Length: 103
Image (cartoon, rainbow, N blue to C red; front, side, top):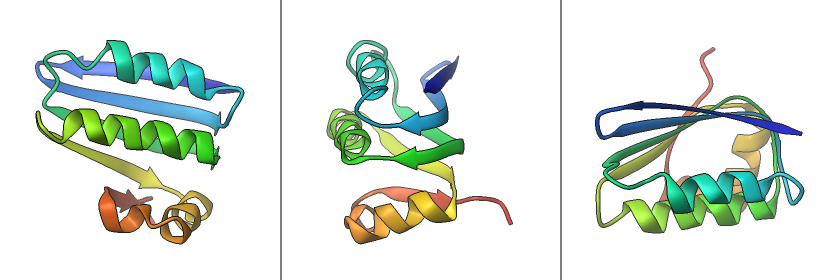
């Protein structure tokens, strides 16, 4: 199960995810990435309450990154240790702006 909370302020969109981003929940996030980025030049994914990410979730982040590259910036914030390990193992730490969780 996953909950998505969107907060938009002018051209900045923050998408906070809570729960698990996996094959059973990824379509909800894909719809946000496909439909809700018009006019957005700064996209922030807040993973403070995300406990798990699968390859399907990683694919959706790549989709978001590809959409944002020509129009602005994207970053992932508040990444916990387990999700960060996945990012590092899959090479995402090298291609995305990622900020670890507050310690």
